Image (cartoon, rainbow, N blue to C red; front, top):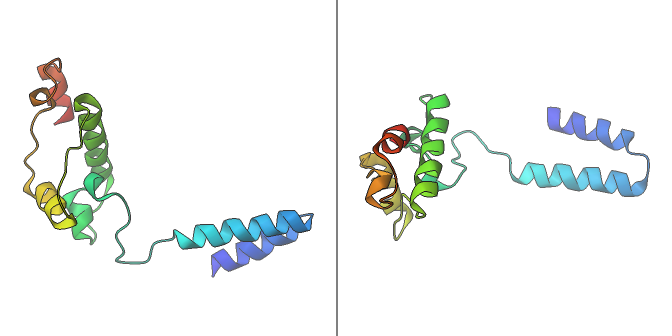
Length: 117
C-alpha cells in the first residue's frame, strides 16, 4: 500500500511527461525485485546456512558469513562453494567445512586464514 502512495506522490512531483514515465518505470522495476515472505533472494554461494533455512534466525552474522565468502574468494581467486547443481552448493554450505585460503594460495599467511575463517 505504501508503495502505491509513494508512486502517486512522486508522479505528481514529476514536471514533464518524460519524468513521469521515468518514475513509473523505476517503480515498476523496483516492484519486480521486491521479495515476499518466505522467498529466498540472493546468490546461493554467498548465503549462510541460516539464510538458506529461512525463519527468524537471520541477523547480522549472516552478513559476516557472506563477507567471509567474498574475502576467501578474493584471496584464492576461485569460488568457495561450487557444485553441479543448487543441491550440491547448499549441501556444501550446510556442512560448514571450509578449507583455509592458504590451501589454494600459498602466499596467504596463517593470520589471514584465521581472520577469514
